[in-house]
Image (cartoon, rainbow, N blue to C red; front, side, top):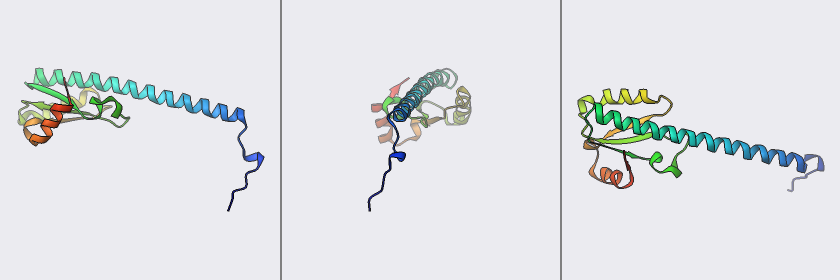
Length: 130
């Protein structure tokens, strides 16, 4: 069965040009907004590293996940950090301080000492030390 297309159902060239221009503008705005969010996330990650090292005696902070690999960053990305030397009794206090850095983006904080060795090795290999 073939669909019947009439001349009235076709978009004229001017309407198509306007549609394409609008679509291109919208895509450019989305790319720009994503880049602004990515830069803000990087700044927050660096601030988190400083806070963790100075306040909680963390010896090392590594960023991993989508933020560490720019091509994977999306509007739904968060900040994934693994730390060395964070006393487990201070973990929840540290997390609550990190949440306050930028409430618009989630931060996942993991203690290296609590992770499987293979995962820590992978994070050390692919992550970014802050």
